[in-house]
Length: 350
Ligand SMILES: *[C@@H]1O[C@H](CO)[C@@H](O)[C@H](O)[C@H]1NC(C)=O
Image (tube, rainbow, N blue to C red; front, side, top):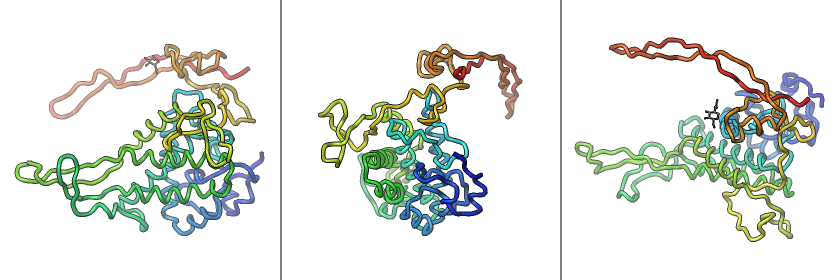
């Protein structure tokens, strides 16, 4: 595939100029455009998405800025695995061809990208960055929890608003297709959106005579996005392989016919490649050059990571802070220590 350089493409601002049709692309690409999201420059947006993009450019800017956050959470979750949520450089599909397959990894990426969009938008709303939303307007007056009554105060994160927008925007693409893969994506998108809400907590401040907490003001706050990442990672581990039901309206588990699927489960159709080798067809980049751990027995062990191809070892010197001493008052002085460590990296295929 010969793409024109992206710069030229942006210049012409005609998406159709540079990209072969039929290659999957999506709103994820906005993350690489920085603040200059131009709705016409994102190949792969469907007309409804383009329309929303033009109507709410500030929202799109926020969404684009948030892409790097959920991608880095994805990479954190899979840092010690063969597939490490790597993105394809200078590629408008962001993840390369890998996600064309309806794999478990595709399920995870669809879920965490939807979750990431909900998270980003909710935060932007709470921080007053957008004109179209703010704190949750329903959290007014007083309410009760297990500890008694409290007054709503401060800013409650308005996750429901962000969930709605995310659903309309992200799902617009899948609603145009209506094939099995689109239904899979819709399911995983929803699981991702719902995951964020799971980690909302009530936070309170105490008032009253000498901190008696006789009066409380509380607000609903999202947890750290890491919690959502950890949760979806668990859902990835227990993801369910499915087949379409005979009416083509939904799914059943491929191997346990009577297993009940829930809306929180991630679902997928196809087995994953082993991600060992560079493979143009599947989009796998392989594990050549990846760092592995010689003493581990897990997925990051050199045996598993390098798929039996073996590894190279090199000595690298690292500088760390050491012998830190506290000086009264108030400074900490450290020495720079050099240490030599062995770094093992997987051999590329021969
Ligand atoms: C390698 O794996 C071992 C065992 O799981 C662990 O204790 C060690 O911290 C790991 N080393 C690195 C550099 O991650």
